[in-house]
Image (cartoon, rainbow, N blue to C red):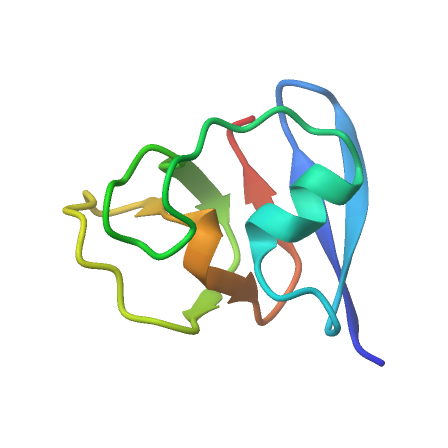
Amino acid sequence: MTITLIRLRQYNTQIPCESRNRSLLDALEMHLVPVEFQCRSGYCGACRLRLLDGKVKYNLEPLAFIHRGEILPCCCLPIEDIELEL
């Protein structure tokens, strides 16, 4: 099992994301980190977060528009340790 770390800048903490998690959103929810979401499929963009460091891989290519430096945690997983503006 692969584990990456998610650093949460605003909370000044870090949490693990395990390879068994279906998405970054699932990992955040499992650790009770509040994140807005609607669809879990990359369609609506409600879960949009700023990625400050690291890289993610999308399970499904998001259809919602995202700006450079933003991610949709509902449909991606980190491929290395990441830092979020959260």
